[in-house]
Structures are given as structure tokens and as C-alpha cells.
Length: 502
Image (tube, rainbow, N blue to C red; front, side, top):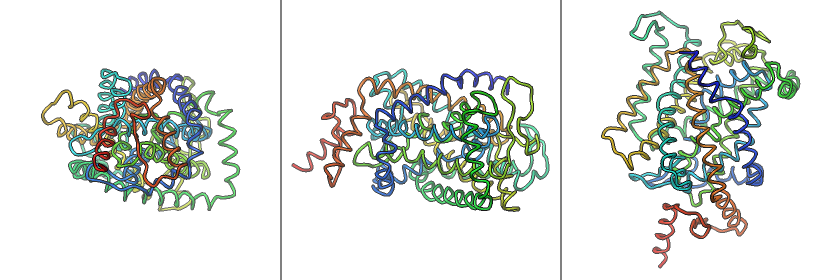
């Protein structure tokens, strides 16, 4: 099974995808005139503006839902894997992906807003919707929708659940080993898996509003607490900080793990963590109630910074500054380590590196704190995955209705979470990488094609900046005036607003 998963990933995550993702980010950075820098202050202002409605969630709630997808096990276990297989230089390439990916996140999230729909009393949107409406390729939209349902409904939740189980087991111990139909399991991991499934079921059966209310409280609080803890670890080892920064920068271009390993693992785990270009962010972006599509695009661009530059960097500095990591030899060489500071049993795909790092500085606190942080990060990511899978089922059911499809999704996802939590970390991450890679290929290709066809996201940005420069009191969006076709939601809103003023 592990060998099969690795072979599939060797094709999906070839150098082509790595440079495709970086190239797209660089391309959109130039085309938006580096919106991620120019409108940074506007991004922060928009975080707290906007209100929810009966059909849409607020800007901040949409940010929280998207952050719940971005800030997950990739920020803790994923960063450790990038360092473990790509060396310290992989951290630099994660930063590069975040900086360039912010422009990609703006484009895809703005498209999600432009082409969203009012479906069953709530806003729905995402790549499947803008592929169908902007590209005019319904078959391609269906491929993306099916791929996303499989990825976010089955493959990716297992990665998050697996990290929760491993973190709790490291913190509390394995307990007794019992025989089950799926093999031997520790009582700690079994109890954790059952608890996660019960809590997840309670929330996902409550709909997107309940998901948004849960994440808007949990995600900001845990991210803030995690960063503060990391700063404490860095502060207690502050004398080593210049050395670590120099290590990251020098190893980025002369990687100890082999030529390309730092870039490859940095990009792979960067995309997995911040999701820029992956196509997941636009789903939450489309659910927001905003005056102009570009507003949510800017907020989602900022969420990439929060994820990678803040949370991922916090993990990286904790691991490197305490020396709590190993660096594996490059694939294709004899097994072993280039650097070995920990036992060879420390799995780089698990939260072990991060837990060891915190334990070295704050004994007795590291393992429990990381277990708690990882639980909330990973759990809220699973919630985001559910919402994304649900949105793509809603897209398909417009043309093909299957009774009980949403209920079936809930049951399948709960089973996937339970199964993923008891599998080995390597298999869980491998399956997750397949899901992320397929979605990234499909989505990045689509937003590039849409750009060359009509440039809707760029037109929306220019229109928003024009209104901003005029200092309008209330923003508006007229897709017809901008030459943007099939933005039916905004066309209908414009007509209704005109009727109200007559």
C-alpha cells in the first residue's frame, strides 16, 4: 500500500507541479502588480469589516473557515516533514510559496465570489462553479468536483485525524493494546478516535453556520496561543536565532538533503499548509457576504500570510532553534540521516519533532500543549473539508440528484476520520498528498485559462481600487459594465438594488 501511494505521488508531485505552482504565483503577482504588498493595509482593514446575513457568513467568519482549512496538521507535522526530508532550507521555500501564493489566493478567491450562487438559502461557490461559468467547460467542472469530494471527503481528513491520534498518544502514552477488526490499537488512540468522530458528527450535522461559529472562536484563539508559545521558546534560545536564520537562507540554495529536495518539500508542504492554488480557499470565500468580490479575495490573500509566515514559521523556528530534528538522506540513496539529533524512530511525518522541541525548553508542557493545539487545528480543518465536499456535492446535484447524498457524505467522512486516525502517518500523508496534488493541478490550470479568456479577477481588482481611490462610502460590483459574463448572482443583486431605488 505504501509503495503504491509513493509511486502515485512521484507522478503527481513531479517537478512539473512544483514549478507550475511557483510559476503561477509569480505570474499572478506581476499581473496584480504585487497586490499582496500594495494592499496589505487594506487586507487588515477588511478583516473586521462586513457583517453576516441570512444567506452568507461575515468576512471574518469566512476568514476563520478558510483558516480552519489552512491552519491544520500541515502547520505542525507538515513543517516537521519539510525539514526532515528537505532540510532547513525547505522553510525558505515555504515562505516563497506563501508570498507568491498570496496573489494566487487572491485570484481564486475573487473568482469564487464572482461566480457564486444562492443555493438553498446559502451562498455556494468554488472552482467547480467558476470553471463551469468562466471557462464554459462543464465536464471539467465535474472532474474537479468529483476529485475534490474524494480528496476532502475521504483522503485529507485522514491526515488530520492521524495527527490528532499520534499527538495524543505521544502526550498520554499508548495505554493497553487491544485487538480490533482493523488490527491492534492502543486504548488511547481508540478513545481519541471515537471522541473526534462524535464531536465532528455533532457539528457537521448542524450546517455551515455552526461550522462558522465554532471556527471563528477556536481558530484565532489557538493560533494566537500557539504563536505566543513559540515566541517563548525562541526567546529562551534567542542567542541562536541569527544562526538559525542564516541556516535557513544558506540551506535554501545549497540544500543538505540534495539538489531540489528543499524546493520540492518546501513547495509541497507549503501548498498543503496554506492551500494557495489548491482550490479549497474559494469555497469559504464564496460563502461570505461582501459588497465587492475583491474584498474577500484580499482577505483570503492575507490568510496565506497568517498560515505560513506566522504559524508555520513558529513551528519551524521552534524545531530548528532547539535542534529537535533529523534530516533524512535524499530519496534514491541508501537509507539513513544527514543530520540525526533524535532517535531514528521519530517519524518526520508526525508531530514528534514539534513536541520534542517544546519539551526541551518547557519540560512537561510540550507534548500536552502540542496535542491540544494539534487537536483544534486539525479538527477545524476537518470541518472545513466537510464544508468543501458538501459544496461540491451541491454543485453536482444541480444536474443529478441522488437521495440522501449529503447524509451519505457525513457517514463516509466520519468513517474516513476514524480509519485515518488509526493508520500509520506515512500512509495517511501519502494519501493526503494525492488529494492535494490532483486538486492543485486542476485548479491552477483552470485559473490560468480563465485569466487568458477574460481576466475577471484582475478586472474586479481594478474596479475595487478605482472605487477605493474615489473614497466611496459603499462599494458596488457591476459585472456587466466590466465585461464579466455569467456572474448571475451579482447581476441579480444589481437589478434588485436598482428596483429598490426606483
